[in-house]
Image (cartoon, rainbow, N blue to C red; front, side, top):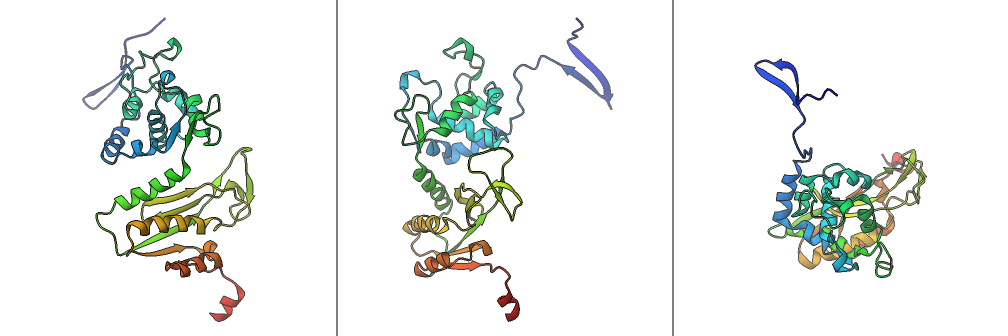
Length: 284
């Protein structure tokens, strides 16, 4: 029964400290506006959305593929990793601004139960992430599918476009790292080196540019799939930069005959670590 318009606290020097409850729609994600400026400059989200095929009825859509992709990407960039975070984030007017929504408060939503929520809920985003090219055209709910090959090409294209002219030499860094699991996720496997249940994704970088991110189960060798990824990436780079020298770099987990043989056959340099063993120790 006691609801004052404001709370007055001890002052800070000559400044009054007051708590009020009339701030309206408040967000803690204002920094996302800087990300929006970057995206408007490079057009990443438009190109990313173009890698998806939408089989939904256009007359029944409130959230375009571009809106859904943008909402998920901005959410991840702002630290909201889980889909269920969006059951609260869907109310955030600033996030709606980042996505590009005209109705920032959601007051013009078609269904009464959605009004006040300008963005999609976690269930809608879940359908975006789980749709597959094989089933999206006939699935009742998961009717959006990503073109994985187009997504792979986009990462390399962004890297190539970051240079004004072809460099004389580039380094490709290969790395496998643990992605710990804390539940009964599909494909969970205990990895002896990392001493936990985890996935073992493969990453390929060139400087700060990510060229490949491949999710793998942890019951594989660290180098598994590396030759296929190198063949794809090197081929795409050389189609644009035929004279650029390419060198790969990795730790001993990638010191495998298949990788070295491929590099030598395709004129790719390599600097790989060697695991300690008795013969090397004797040679030293």
